[in-house]
Length: 339
Image (cartoon, rainbow, N blue to C red; front, side):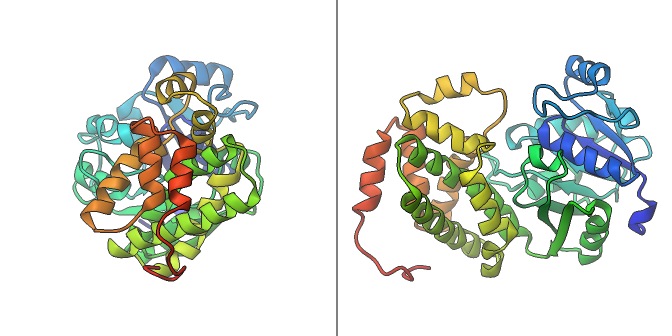
């Protein structure tokens, strides 16, 4: 990958809100951007309307930003691929791209989740599909609705290859989209995945009518158990106090845009999970990620009481108020005990 100024052909895979927002960021910098979607009918709608009314209503897509559902056209001469596909669909969606992928083409992952069947993080899934491509992550506190409206946002680009991270940083950074670098791939992916689980718990707090005290405690203790798991898996402790840890956690737990927070709120107000899923038009990554995080907690022998109770509420139909009471009545401990 050469100097970022030479990167003119960028393919963004995924026509959801975040994929569209990132395509707009890249287009605003003068790159030749192609936005690819897996559903031909919706792609044709986007090409006609030049607005992603389903996921990013009110934001116009410039005429110069190409949109396609053709896999071969999407990868034609591209020299940077951005993957913005929900975790449950990443592997299946990307399989047809294998025969067109040019080895060595850098891939930027914005995946925030952990695969249920394999417990692989986003970057691990991509490596498994494409056989060790150069990978960077672009993650952090970033709602598509705000990025698309040019509201100041700060994220982190992460890679084991610092040169690649720096080049991706220069590719994306704008006056309203600031990008820092970080080399802790494990920590960044765990932080930005587990926060979706804690956000469901935050929504439960909102749905039960709790206040600021409850939300502050939840965010703080949620960060503690996220850190415990991340460090046990090889992440660096400092990462969890940064953009991909505390930053992303706060945004997801308090924002009205947060789909995971909304799931928790609706369930706390009496709706069942199947009903919530039926009514949503976007993926809430935290639901399935809860299963993966619980499995990782067992695998690495890490105590994660909030995550465990979220699992019980989602998949065992436990009463949300009872789950909160049991969390509050756990054995008294030191705040520093077990970090």
